[in-house]
Amino acid sequence: MKTTYTAVDAAYLGQRKLRRHARVFQLWAMGVGAVISGDFFGWNFGLTAGGFGGMLLAVVVMTVMYIGLCFSIAEMSPALPHAGGAYSFARTSMGVWAGYITGLAENMEYILTPAVIVVGIGGYLGAVFGTAHAWEPLWWLAAYGVFVALNIWGVEMTFHVSVVITLAAIAILAVFWAGALPHFDLQRWASPFFPAGRGKLSSAIVELPFALWLYLGIEQLPLAAEESHDPKRDMPRGILYGLVTLIAISFLTVVLSAGIAPGAAAIAKSNEPLFLGFQTIFGQGLKTRVLALIACTGLIASFHTIIFAYGRQIYSLSRAGYFPTWLSVTHRTRNTPHRALLAGSALGFLVALAIHLAPQGSPVGAVLLNMAVFGAVIAYMLQMLSFIVLRVRFPKMERPYRSPVGIAGAAAALAIAGITLFTLFQNPDYNKGVVGAAVWFLLGIVYHAVHGRHGLVLSPEEESALQHQRERTS
Image (cartoon, rainbow, N blue to C red; front, side, top):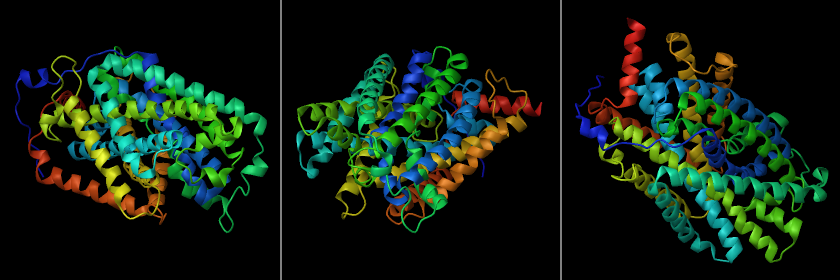
């Protein structure tokens, strides 16, 4: 099937400019902020199926996977410093179809992840202000409105807000960790470590999608390459510093949350698990409600930064013609992809609302989480395959940073992501949502086969890929 390119003039790219602002500290904050909501909400749903023991083993496995993933993208992102991120890696290494499928999977991840987080925001705000469950979509709508507006306002504002709320979220977690220690009794509150009738291995496997939630999002940093002053130097540092921070945060949060009252069984069912922890530490009074309100900072940090991610991700695929090109036009004065931001937020909100209005079954947040993880693990697998292919086919490519774990680390991450993808379809509580995500994914592939591949544009990602291919064959 032949791919065709549409000729565009200089004005086309002139209407699609981004503004450079970020350095290492801003990139670190963006990476940690994108993920930190997972410590406030989401991971706990997995305790129902695999218990605390299964979760702890799953977090260890996911830590190994993200070490391989992050070292790999730390090598690829400065070598291919484009706003397309994962799509750019796959496009250069394996061609147009691989680039699009990788971009489509990542697009699903980044649109659905804020939808998961906004459900958590609604849960925390509902608990603090005592609003009814039926009001939650109004909290969602308000959150989307505020943070899409901040992202449209400008990249400087986006990064400044990201730094402030990420530091605030870490401070709130530190208060929780310190307060939890005097109440800590793992044997009492986390037992039994593994559910009756389920072994250690099977407990860990069913918890993989939820353990992944403690790290999901840090891989978005390559999307900021065109807004970084020095992506070849700063991008690897931002990614790896962020990963080290998240490893420490993840283990502290999981162990201490399960080891205090009301215990692992109770927080497994909660939309606001940290709120329950604060009730144990500080009681039922006003102080706890204020801390729970402040705890929304963690959810807001990820919500804000992943809105940034899907804006740039839609922008890059649209600029290259994979998505309708009108989506990539940036704001005339602020140079932000306002159309992509608005389109992504509308789609995420509508998916969350549709699940909320469906006949009651599994928690909305848990269903959306598994749908987002579906897109994520496909994108991870293709990125790791891209890394391996780039190492083999393009050995002379300039690499300002080289992964110390190399192909072996990428292969391990690829294998763990594949196991996680298989696991998503095995849990009957959530697999209907995953099937829906798979249908969405297949429809996107059909769109490209019928229409998208006939109108591609020589965007920076496409030109770079073609240039590397020419150098390889010359």
